[in-house]
Amino acid sequence: MKKRVLIVDDHPQMVDSICKSFSEHEFLEICGRASSGHEALEKADELKPDLVILDLAIPDLNGLKTAKAISEILPGVRIILFTVYAQNIKDSHMDISGITRIVSKNEPNTLVAHAEDLVRAA
Image (cartoon, rainbow, N blue to C red; front, side, top):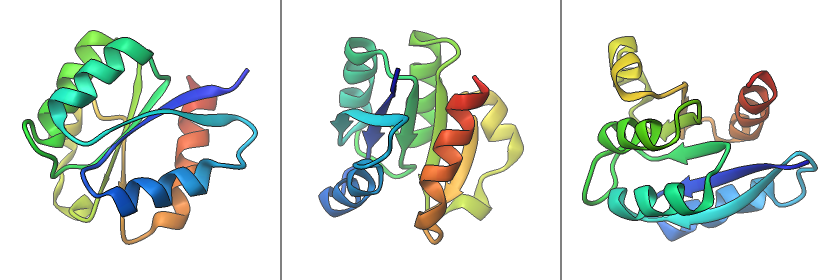
């Protein structure tokens, strides 16, 4: 059974790129997209993804607040913060926000491997 992935990013080109990276994956499938914090909360509640890939700088709520709210709605969901600011996020932010892993947008080719690793470990 495939694991479901929700993509949250306000840049359509980035979302398209992420979706393309996952398009032929046998274990992971994109179940939805959101472009803001509030939309991400609605989609997470509706779609019940196994994994959320979340940008830090999104409208309405930032990625940290969105991650915290999603993890409250879906305890145990895996959340990857996919951001250019990866080096600036401290471990304490991960603990508070419910983020499982941080992946740099400067290394986009590692995203699928991180995603697969997290959902297989769940």
